[in-house]
Image (cartoon, rainbow, N blue to C red; front, side, top):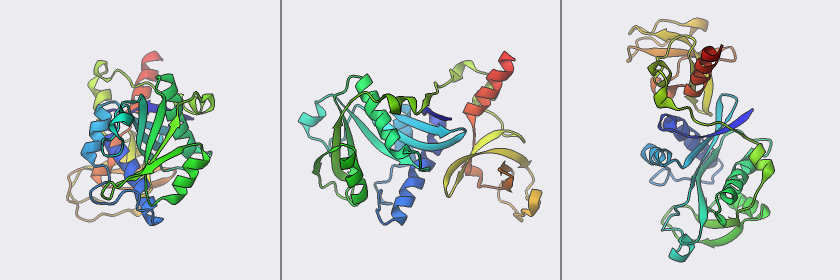
Length: 272
């Protein structure tokens, strides 16, 4: 089941992982989608967009698989004053790390449908100028090429499309409202990671869902299940995590509580 929800500040690391995983894959294809310096969105910029309520996360089950930022405010370097005065939605930082089932197109179509719902006349994109394949795809999907601007090493190929209802895209994702975190117990808002805690783990292939298998608290990082050995560690606490029978020890800064699943478990227990 694919769900979509508005990101909250605790999702910043997950969104950062999604965006940079997608950008790295495009780099490997020689598209250089977001140059390493300075145009890739920083952790701080992603956090700003999340706090502004602009960022959305798509999950397949527990796995985060896509994200995008949706704003009514366009980039003044890209769009003219007269264009910015028009009622439009601007879609940026779109990243899809799991392909198939037309997911790439559905994510953007969902934005077009939402724009129509909100009364915006247009949806606008700023696409990296070197990604000709994406330009061709946009045209095939009915996007109008506005112009290619000189943005000093950033994006630059501008597209727009009239907002229109799209029931197929709307129904492709189940809406998942954010819990009222402030009303929940601290153990749900700020969970302690223990054996059995659901987590999201950053990997080279993007963030994936897993479960804490073991909390390793001593400095020696003794061997854990399946023969993994880290030798002398530099952190007093690390986590062995498990997914599909595999157990590994990720970097400590790449393990994040899966708060949505923790909330769902809390809710089910409270109702049971």
